[in-house]
Length: 341
Image 1: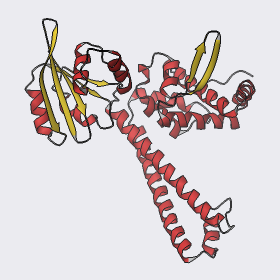
Image 2 (image 1 turned 90 degrees about the vertical axis):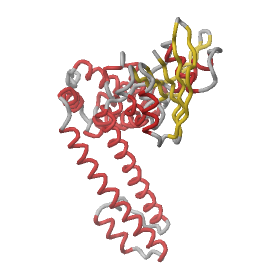
Image 3 (image 1 turned 120 degrees about the horizontal axis):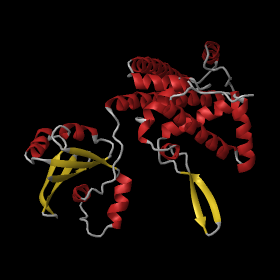
Image 4 (image 1 turned 90 degrees about the horizontal axis):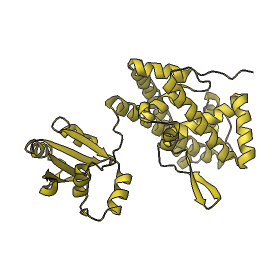
């Protein structure tokens, strides 16, 4: 069996082949290609015979795995951060990244990263694009409000029809009017694109397999949880069955606080923020809706504020609890149940 480490960059890929024979490992071949040499890369792997391959979970790994998946005995996506820790703590490994990957793959010591299924990847593309559009809309609106504030003419309902009529009547300078018109065009464009991506997401949901449809129905039973939140949770978690506990889900979302212990002293640090930013944002936004509209959750929030002395810490803690509830519901398949009065 041959073990191949692929050090993938934006424009090039370095390959190292390690062979195991009689319990000994040796490098039998090294090769470097431009990423555009797709045919040559595939020919390289076709000539290897039986092999396993590993590549780090970089931003653009998918094209490579799709290229060699059908040839490999096994294709492994390596976790960059965990691999770095292991590599730096082991003295007998080569400094070359591709050889490190191949060596740890041969030793069966490679920390793996989750590789989303094709449907999950498509779901994430749509959701993350939607989030970017929403951010651009917010940015344009802030620019328009700032512009009107310079004329002491900002109003609460600026982005209604009446507000736009108000904007048209303000005596802006020629340059400011030009900028405002361009910003209005951007706003209308992004709003139109947002409606289009929402329609695409609706079609995507309608074509969901049975298991996903059931998960959607379970999450939809939670008050104050809408379609966007459901989409974010399902797309960012992917196959939620891969998590063994709610603790792992919380860590994945970057909502778990760090802890520093020394002797009998214990000090909680800020949350890690190393997981899914979009999932973390969705949970915190949903937590605020719970606080505003649901009395029981508001009581929990107020108690957390009292204990922590911080509204910010309290809302993060509440978001953490909410995510645990969602995960528990997904595992059990049971709808949300209101507590007895």
